[in-house]
Length: 316
Image (cartoon, rainbow, N blue to C red; front, top):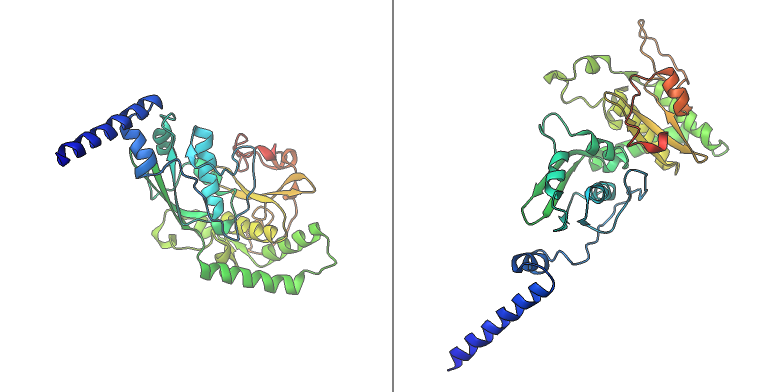
């Protein structure tokens, strides 16, 4: 008798569960997945490290809602995760955003050895270099749960080295009575005067001999005094952020430089092109690409600086 009552009670619970699912226009499987397996409706909070910038841009913005409703929201979530400095973080696709996994798949590299599609690379340019990724792994399942794992460009040892070297440069060359632009110019000039463009690495990008080169990083620039555009732009970005100057790295097809918000104006700063390569190998310092507007930049060069104006809208 007791067993039959228990079975009846259990059937009533199941029946009630079905009614609830119908009332809320959800299938039982979706309801269970959302509320019990993944707890998708719970508030998800993200922890941010000391290098999180928390800046909104015209193309992507910081969000605290980690259930993607559409493509723009998906980009905002990815940007927020990268900006936070998290090593891994999960989020969800809303059940009504039916192309979510397909859209996400278009952002994932087709060839993991060759790098990432432009959108992810451009989003990476908006975060602090210390939070930027070297490798991004995305794990998806059919229930709309996505896990992102991030291998950062810089480890703690490299970060400490860079910070200590910048401390030394500031102590020796930067004074308190300098205005903001003079401090930037002094640092810009120091970097150029102590660094040469890595012609060999630039000419042998796919060569195994140069795969482990650090020329594209700030620590490689400071340690070896040779660099590619990535090294120049990263070290300038790190220093500008120290000065509380909003900046991003802006990239074209094969080049990257800095975009700087100074006195509420977005200006270009390209230390790589201010450090021209000479036939004699002698050091030359110019300021043609130091804090110039977009019109002037494209007047000087519209080929290597042909960036995506839909993404870097602040540069217009």
